[in-house]
Image (tube, rainbow, N blue to C red; front, side, top):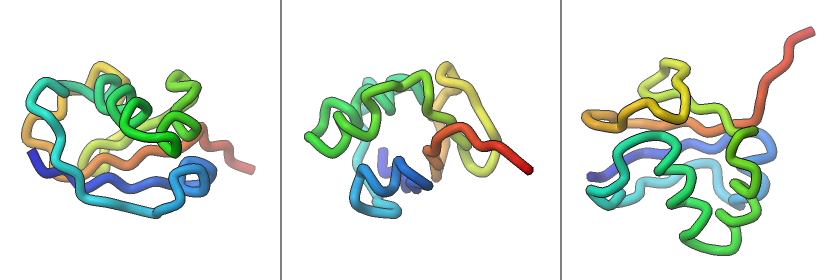
Length: 85
C-alpha cells in the first residue's frame, strides 16, 4: 500500500525530510506497527522513533492512537506531543 507520510517538528528534523510516499508492507496494519517499521527502516528512523510512545499521529487528518488501523488510509502525519499557550 502506498502511503503519504508527513513529519512535523523534531520528528521532521530527525528524519531529515518533511514528507514522503512509502510502499508499506501488507503486514503493517496499524499506526504503532507503522512507527515500528519506520524505526527499523534506517538510522534516521531509529533516531526519530526511538521513543514511540512520544509520537502522536493523525490518519487522514484525524487524531488516532497507535492501534488505529491503516486500512484505506491515504496519509499519516507523525509528530511529537503538542502544547498550546
